[in-house]
Length: 291
Image (cartoon, rainbow, N blue to C red; front, side, top):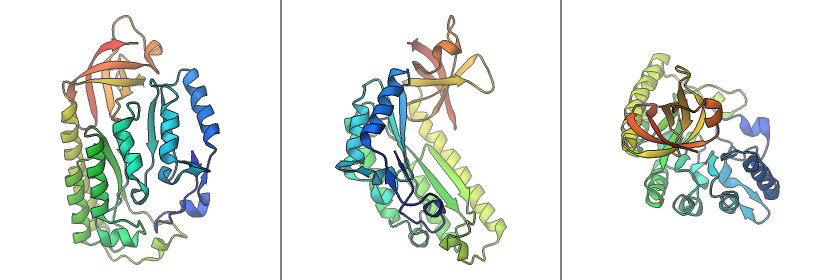
């Protein structure tokens, strides 16, 4: 729905390579969504480096979400990525208002340390981020949260890292994309000196991965015994007799292909799956209904 970025996070090269933000015309977006739905697609994701900044004339991001969701109650709607400094109460409220806005939010925090966030030029604090999480869960307690985190940003101390680890524990993410800082030439962060030994950064990264895995496993337990609407994407990479799809919460779900059905018939459709087992990175169960 938009290209470019105006945020200039100190570690990111996107504004220099893709230019400033440019939002697409909403009618063009809606025409594309209607065409996809008419051709059998049942899920769309509104994409942008910072979708919260979308604006085309009088149409801001909350209004665009509403218009896309109005295309059909059978169309599942997602969006990514949200910058915490621009996530508004109006957008958050939509998670409680629109049944077909999927209960999953990717909200990159990058660090739990205010000192590091300032050095990253993120323009929010850990407290502000946690307040957004609270508001999201008030709007819809079922929303699954995911995030991005950089370990080893230049000058990160043990105290900074522990602040990040504590934030991850407090939020309770379903999924976390963890990265070790990688220098991008031409960005302000590339000029920052960092005396931290590589072994220390790797140790912190490994520690964070353990915390993430423990939290993801805990989050997935809430789905045990529930029946979820799963959009079938294909078969499991390990077993062609098992379908793989996505729950509304953007969690991978596996289930045996029902007798009398083929994956070609099921792919792209939504099936109801009763969750029998909740593992760290996926759910598994049985199809109880298929379109």
